[in-house]
Length: 217
Image (cartoon, rainbow, N blue to C red; front, side):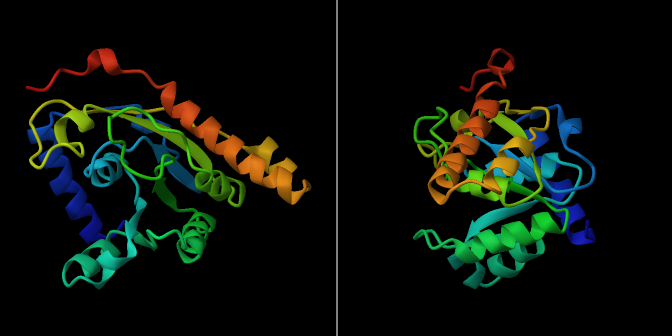
């Protein structure tokens, strides 16, 4: 972890503690070493920095490639290990960077739903995360965010104060699916990508802490 990353994490943790009174449950589920995919529901613009700063190791995250061309913003997110992705769907280069970082025993944050939820509810998973899982040796740690949609969802321009809870689940292994993927047909491989994605989103859905969340004004 670089000094710059550490300082930014300290600042964001302080902000989330002050404004959102955030609560982090199960962060010890994140392995200290080795390749890890942190898979979370996506309900707010603040999800990436919030989840990333909750973890005690350097986390990479995906960012729209056009952001990297903006002065100040581009260099800033590069220092925070952002991975550029093409929003039009041509994600080959982005996938390669993701896999390279996982092969280097990195930790990367992915959102199986692909985009922010419009109503705060969990959406079906895209097959892309299944591809990343099967082409890597990473374990998957599911995370569910509670309260962030009410605080700063698509329907809000200013974040409301209140409580946000992050709940981390136990690591998920996909060794059986990887073994099948190494010998199956292309048609079956495509099915496997979606099956893995569905299993990941199921792991997120199984995390329930809703009763602990205080309502927002």
